Amino acid sequence: MDVKEVERLIKISRERPLMPETYIPWQLEPGPEDVFLPEILTSLQGLAIYESLTPAQKLELGRHELVQVIASYAWGECLFCVFMTQHLLTLPPNDVEHQFIIRELIEEFRHQEMFAQAIAKINGKPIKQSGLHKFFGEFSNKYLPADYLFMGSVSVELVTDVYGNYARKAPNIYPVLKKMFDLHNIEEGRHILFTKALLKTYSAKAGYIKRTLYSYVILFNILFVRTMYVKKEIYERIGLENPQLVYKLASKNFKQKFADTCLKDIIEFVDSWKGFNTLTRFAWRWILAAKL
Ligand SMILES: [Fe+2]
Ligand SMILES: [Fe+2]
Image (cartoon, rainbow, N blue to C red; front, side):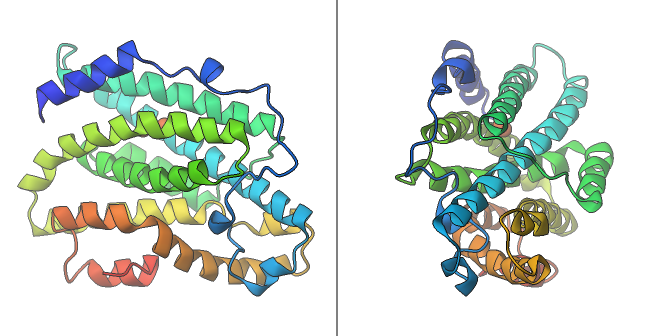
């Protein structure tokens, strides 16, 4: 890891902190044209059923799905903080990695508070993670070695970064959410730089088996993100008939859209350390519909 570069990142974090309390215009209410999630990121856009929704239903779909997205971020970041806190105990305090992780923890806790406030601001009612999500999240956090968890975290950060970019650039996104994504994007950008630098050494040393395992850890982390917000309950909430059928159609639709819009950076990253091979390529194509 390039110590100078990490020191530069620590310095920015200390000297130019972005405080959600002042950075986000919390007092602003959504305007009549504002949306909560760009259409392209909603699970139903692209399906015939989407065209039959009323404007109010479309708005509500975006609101519920956005709440699910940020509630998932908050939960995932909290899990990652648990891991980082434990990892911190293994590092000497004068180590540059130790210092950066403290900064990252401070920022991640601020993000979690910010996400929770945003959910409250738009009257969100997050749906709990499924048992499977909860189990795998907690299991991997407890038992996977540090390098695997960092691999998982950078993959989630890369995907959510793409996500945030879509949301920030949508012309009519509710300004509170736009600023929230701006803030997150800036700070996560530094986390990504650090984690990638850290992982360079791990992936350089990794042989075929380890690269294969890394690749699978990333694949499942991404699957995790993708499936956290396509929810039957949301279709019920916006008053659709046959929510189970809508859920099935939406899952298929969103799998393809997600592959088309969110996977480019992560594929480049995995490819950079030869994470695609005979044992992994088929799974990426099959489970994530990745174009490799
Ligand atoms: Fe974060
Ligand atoms: Fe982060």
